[in-house]
Length: 356
Image (cartoon, rainbow, N blue to C red; front, side, top):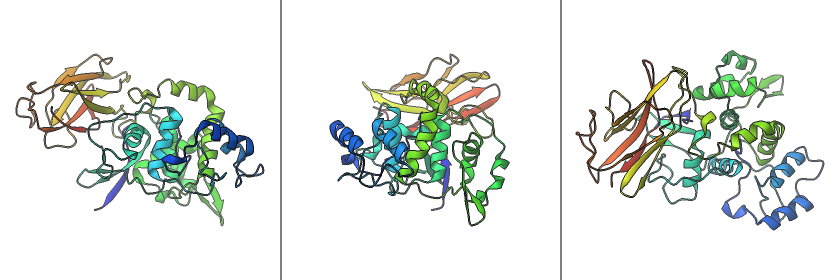
């Protein structure tokens, strides 16, 4: 199956890959401070990333990997990358009924972390619109660019992608991520390097723990005011500045989540602040994994931008689409929200749940 890499709809920030260790590698707080005082055997004070690694450790963003080591050259996997984002931003873990990705099953340790960190991650979409996360693959520099840009609140900006023309490997950047890489370069969040007379961004190069530490340190230690602002929005239900814009319209894409509570399905989305916003259409479908208004009808039309959730239960009526007029218990539905901006319509991501 052919995969296309895409950015997901949506750290304060980068928490992105600070460690490649398994869950057990999160040492106790006492051990954390002990390592910080003694230093790591493999990170002497003259190590190029010493200050960044010390900052990460003191900030409890990362721990060592055991036996007094930090393992600075060790690469960071995509599932670990997601977990670091959650821990850095202190995001509230969510636990949806179903996974957004076909290669991460509910119940695995990665599940909650990846679902919670979705607004900052990249994903893989197949030609038949199925989503995969590839949790065991290694994180790349272009993944870091996406996370940093979203976390720092730059993702809604427009940018002239010709800023990438100075890089000899610009064509290696995944097409749908070029905007984010360009913004990262524009704001000096990430830059490339010279090698054998060529200027490279190295988008597909994997990041090790030391490199991740330095990028995090440079982006956030020197932007403490920005970080504080973002931390006020760190809960998954309200990452306002991290919601990406639709590439064709420039308008905010609804970031949708859903859960089952007391026999009802609660569909939630982030508040949209765009000036041209006119309303939300809550949509659902039995057969379309990406339902959108008006093609798939709608459940409710909401014009108050401050209303960001609805309750749906068996027996509720539905207008149009393939629902059959009413929601039925035991049926699986894809739920989403379409944002209306005048005559423009922007569909959010979809969440699949079984009606109680």
